[in-house]
Length: 332
Image 1 (cartoon, rainbow, N blue to C red):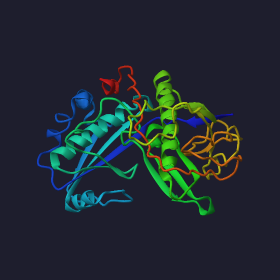
Image 2: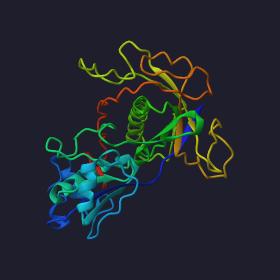
Image 3: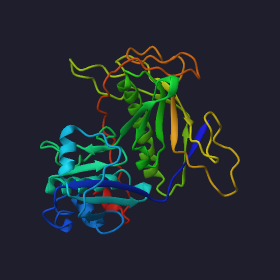
């Protein structure tokens, strides 16, 4: 079976920069202090919907954020915030999001503040050895967050935060063991790598598509390079066969498929595919013999993860280059 994903005409990417004060106008920072890989694109896009920067001289009120103690202390000292947004077509991904985050990094460095990603519920790390936005794109470079919450008697429900920034549904795994969330996020991170790699390639090859069909069964192969001695093994040890997983739309909406339903259901004429906002990930029977990932044997049984292996860094997904239109500078 194939799952139909509706592609929006535009996507909005947003970052918040909380600062004690901004010592100069935003026009003196963006685009001139944006990191070199994205300065040219920021120069072309600044002041348009592709890159909008708004300075607010009031503190930013945080929502549900995962902050360290140092970040909370810094946030309490902030008195202003800057909102950086990019509204662009999906074909500009991932470069449009990278340019927006590069501009947010430049503002945070100038004002001594924090870059907050409300979608993932986390901050973007800023440090001496990572001052600028990386030139390559990797989902593991803080583009995804994880929402972990109880799922009744089935253990934990772990859901990604951030895939919808790339016109993909979020992915969720039910039944993770309460003390072993790292293995669940590592598995979901591997699925996200696979989905994003294919999705960005599709958007590059079909820039004007309004729908994308994906298979509901995927082979998730090991994607990590050999790990140095002393580091914990990944969920895909050397020599382990790839994992087979099933994707099931699980939105609760009258026009969206219920869990297990086929995607091609009756919809109003001309309505196109219903928008799917969440996919459930189910490792299939026979994939439970991986050393650090034990999966329940029966289809439909709660999926149990019994390891806390730390998710590893993912290999880069090359930045897609796009034809010259107002978004031409994204890949420059």
